[in-house]
Length: 283
Image 1 (cartoon, rainbow, N blue to C red):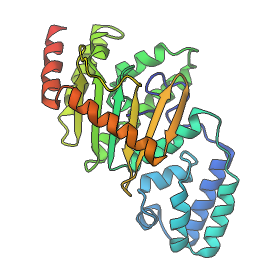
Image 2 (cartoon, rainbow, N blue to C red):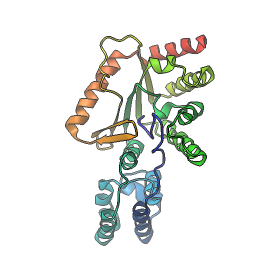
Image 3 (spheres, helix red, strand yellow):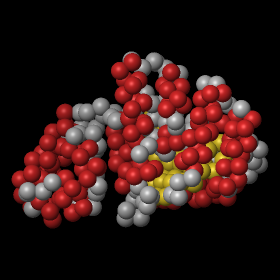
Image 4 (cartoon, one colour):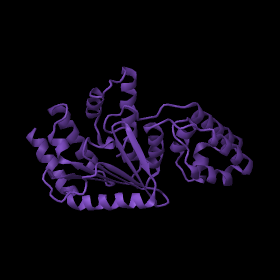
């Protein structure tokens, strides 16, 4: 789904920690401890998962505004003022990293996640060999330590598919991405096997956009959409080491309309599985 840099990964995955984010996380942890609450106890009270709260306290996620509002009822007015002061000191990294931290948090809490990709297979569906092939082709090249870190981060992110069985995942991918055989036959075979396994999950739907489709609504490019717990839709787009979070309801609605149209234009989930089986047999 969209992406810890699904197209290359140079700036994404688990974002670099900033001092301000780590400070905010430490303040939140101290206030939570002072209230005598564990992460597991605190998380449902503010309507987030314990895993998400843990990442905020570690400085790995940008805290959403709702967290500040909800914390006042749990921690008290004084603690809320301290937390708000810490939030005002936060500095966002320029470019993709700050946007992705916001999207990653939305993604982890979403009740529905949709993604259309025309450049690479969505990050949530990439097997390890395919991930490594992408990073091998990254320009400028990644240092070895960063390379392994990015691979691990993306594989970790894929746990969303199994750990959120009540979240609906929908993916539309261009058939051309499979026909391309990126990195060779073995990687493509592993990719198709991975897609077939993921597609058997009850909460995952994968659709292929045929090579020939005269009525194609995806000409404006890849997109990702998330439905929040409050049933708001948020969009995300990414290209060439830049990205944008789209929270404007009108813009997100337009993206949702385009995605809905593409679902009707792509092969069905069942027809896509049959296509994958055929392509697998032809390799």
